[in-house]
Each structure stands twice: as structure tokens, then as C-alpha cells.
Length: 238
Ligand code: UDP
Image 1 (cartoon, protein in one colour):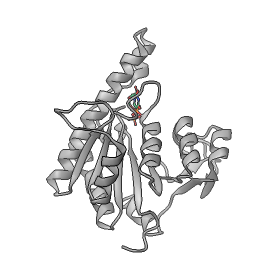
Image 2 (cartoon, helix red, strand yellow):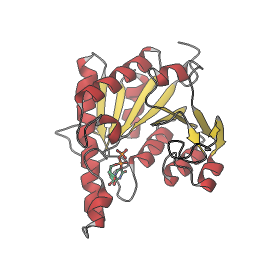
Image 3 (tube, rainbow, N blue to C red):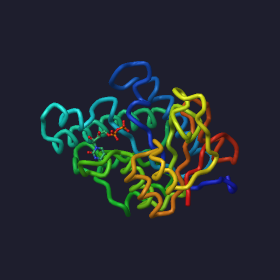
Image 4 (cartoon, helix red, strand yellow):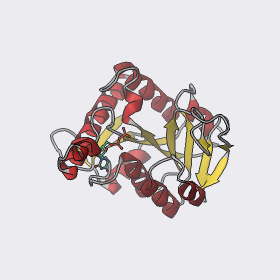
């Protein structure tokens, strides 16, 4: 327990990761799988915050693209993240993992409102904190929410699961010549426009000096392995 590579971590779970083989919505089996992984990470002794996306249910830009109001679309997107968080809270409770859902937008009847101080105290108590509604502001994504909460919680790393085992110079699923990086700097990621997280999230992680660990969602025990100094991932850092 004492020699974890990162003690307090922020996991970014995209909405797509929760829809499994479905074309939209929440696949309970996928939610249960991610909940199990979160429980395993906690069992190692790590403190875990989780930012969950909403793309499986709603994306704000799709409203704007159809001539609607972008801000309202983004509000709908943030509400979608709340549904995913509630599903994850259920899944964690069902396996006896203590969990608190906190929303960036007040909805007291449904979950607690986020405050930095309360969230930090919950993490220190060993509770999983699920961060809903991203940053609470439009025109950004839950990637930015993940970097923001990681900075506020003084996390040691942000974990970003993807379809492949790290950061490549191009999409390795389309380009067999793509080069994989074991390590890469924030500046290089931004300069090359590599699709790690959105640019605002990378800049915020850089500002707060929090490494982003990019790993494959398809690797069983991916995060557990990495926390113990094994496993395959790209580390984005200074
Ligand atoms: N969103 C937002 N502000 C935030 C986080 C999310 O406006 O701080 C909205 C935005 O419309 C976004 C949607 O919520 O498209 C869903 O979040 P995201 O696209 O990050 O979900 P993911 O791709 O991780 O499933």
C-alpha cells in the first residue's frame, strides 16, 4: 500500500466507455465493470476521484450544429453526465464501496453540490468522489472538468483511458507507421495537436503540473497495474 506510484488519482471515464456495444445510453454491465475497477484501485490504498462524461447520452455541439443555442446544448450535456454519475454511484454502492456524487451545478435533491473542501475531505476519508456536471460551465468538456478537479484535489495523476495503449504520433488504428511514445511533454502534445485530451485540459494539467497517464481501456486491471509501477501507458508531463 505504501509504495503506490500515485496516491490520489483522478480517473476520467468517457460517456462512450459506459455504452459498451450499444449505440447510445448506459450499458449496466459496462458500468459494473468500471465500478469493479474503481473498487480495485481503492483497495490498493489509492484515493479516487472520478469525472464521468456524457457523450453516450448527449453532446452540446450537436444542438449548436442544428442551429440551436450552444449554451443550452451544453447544459443538456452536463445533465447527461449527472445520469452517468448516478448510475456509477449505484454500481459502486451495490459492491459496498463508499461513494459520494457531487455536482458542479446545484441539484440538492439529487446529489451534493461540489465544493473543493468537502470533496477533498471525502477523498481523505477513503470515499470515492464522483464529479458530475463537468466544470459547470459551457464551451468546455469533461476533459477540462477532469483536469480542473485534479488540480483542485491536488491529485498525483489524471488517468485517461483510450482505445489504444498510449499516445501515438497518429491514429495507430488507421496509420501503421504511427510512433508510440512512452513519455511526452504537455508542450509537444499541444504543438503536435495529439488527441490526448482537449487542449484546455492539457494546458490546465500543465499549469498544475499533474501528469496525464494515457492507457488502454481494453487492458484488464490497467490502472491497478500502472499504480504498482507495471502496465503500459504514456506519461504526459513537464
Ligand atoms: N459539458 C459542458 N461543460 C463541461 C463538461 C461537459 O458544457 O464542463 C457538456 C458538453 O456539451 C459536452 C457534454 O457536456 O459535449 C458531454 O461531455 P463530454 O463531451 O466531455 O463527454 P464524453 O466525451 O467524455 O463522454
